[in-house]
Amino acid sequence: MTIYSTHSSTQNQFRFRVFIPTNNDLTIEAYEAITHQILSDLIEAGYANKKGNVDKTHGLDTSKMSPISLFYLPCRPADKEGPSSKRTRTKLDSH
View 1: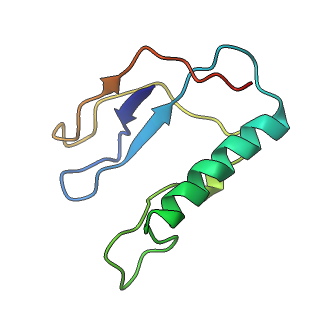
View 2 (view 1 turned 180 degrees about the horizontal axis):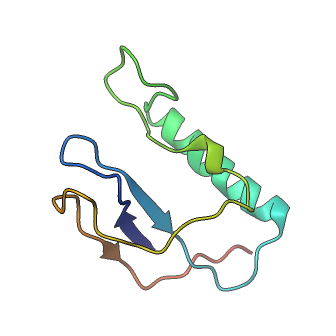
View 3 (view 1 turned 30 degrees about the horizontal axis):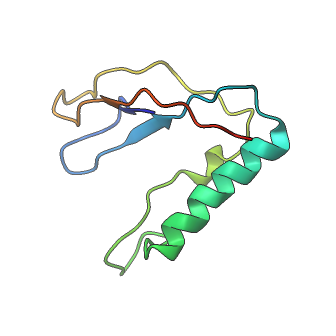
């Protein structure tokens, strides 16, 4: 797994992307099942789906749940103070 900040990330509002490599290609159905399970787990853990008068929001960009979304390569945030990237070596086994 690789986590990296977006260009629009700031000290006050971290924005990041998560790249989860898999050991095989995913079907559209598998991709959607995994992304929806991640969203479900976040909500079940107490993270709200919307910003507002809540203690925790998950921050998942639900407009990017489609497998055809376009993402840019990792970059440094504009304010250069955002979180650093983190990598792990284990691939997700989607079978």
